[in-house]
Image 1 (cartoon, rainbow, N blue to C red):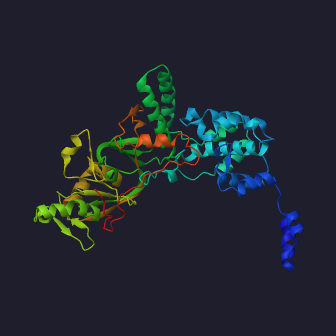
Image 2: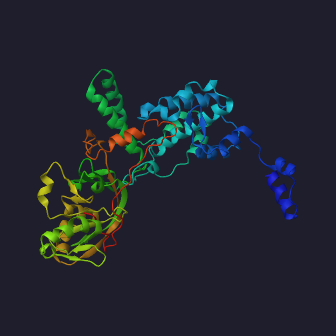
Amino acid sequence: MIALVAVCSLTACGTDPQPEAASILAPQGDTDLRSRIEDASDLVVDGERLNAALLQRFYARHDFEPVWTTRPEQADSLVDAVLHAGDQGLNPDLFHADLLQRSETLPPVDRELVLSDAFLSYADALARGAVPVERRGDDEVLTPGPVNVAAVLDDAMDSSDPAAEIEALAPTTPTYTALLDALRKYRAAAAAGNKVAKGRVRTIEVNLERQRWLPRSLPEDRVWVNVADQRLVLYRDDQPVFSTRVVVGEDVKHNQSPEFRATIDASFFNPPWVIPKDIVTAEILPAISRDPNYLVRNNMVMLPSGEAEQLPGPDAGLGQIMFDMPNRFDVYLHDTPDKYIFNRDNRRISHGCIRVQDPREFAALLMQQPKDEIDEGIAAGGTTRHDLPTPVPVFVVYQTAFVDADGKLQFRPDFYDRDAGIWRKLQKPSLGKEPTVQADNRPGPSGGPHGGPVL
């Protein structure tokens, strides 16, 4: 504070301080530590890449002074936590496990940086995943709320149990807890030579990571669509009150249902289907060339935008109800006239949207109305929008290991082949190599009157 006043006084007088004066007034800190962090475009210690930006945020809180030389017990506690990151389904090598075990042999500045980077990176992995949203594909956009891990480490390093402070960043959902328990059991089985258990361990580690992509406090009222389970569950007061089968996106990449969060704020009765241009090009136009009466038979019209619209009716692609949940993928929950498809085990046949087996009961619960009123509203004809009394968050997830409504751990096939990609990103990358993400080719907003669901 005194230095700031002195500088302001000189500036107010119109006098520039001499370089020697500026040097005296500026915060000093550890010169080597500051220069290593601030001047490094690629900070590496003994072959391990460090996160210079994260370290800069942390040490700016400490005037770039070393913090671990005066806190050996706290450092030891955090080192032990990082070396046991496997208990959370995380590879300790992601957090410089080898360097931590021989940190005393490192030069003082290198040791300081390695310790802090390991602790910060471990905290960040627990808080938002070791594969955060910026390292995932464009169709995996679930993410928890922001966490200032530099501030968390600040609090932890002066607490009586630093490791507990950091590990409190991990989820506490029933699924996460059950997966941790299952991880211990399947690892023991794998060590005893049960080959199936090794695959289960990988599946569990991947799904623990998916849990870390979720908000730490889930809304008590929510819609949960697990694409891998091909099922929708409605929760009230954190308890399941409704469950139904759903149809999800095909296995091919550009038709897979994405993982995202949205909010259902209304129901449309008797909705038209605005067909996105890419579907028109790939499917509608070839059908017209084969059958000139295709548009008439399917109650469709072409739009000047290159899209098409299927007019409302009992045979329309969206059925008689669509749930409005604006999102950048144009993926919606809706009815379908093809009720027979819900009898199939493989219900992966859509362009990405989620077709609901019992949409009228679902609508009645969301709108807090008797089902008869929903039926009457649909029977009245015409496209009408009905706002929900309270908007309800909806999570579209892809969990191949999860706890069901009865608290039982379930496994599902990885039909989108996403688990392997996540597992690879959970391993330590080679220096100079960063795991690549596959771009999503899903179409953007179609501009239709109801958001242009991709169906």
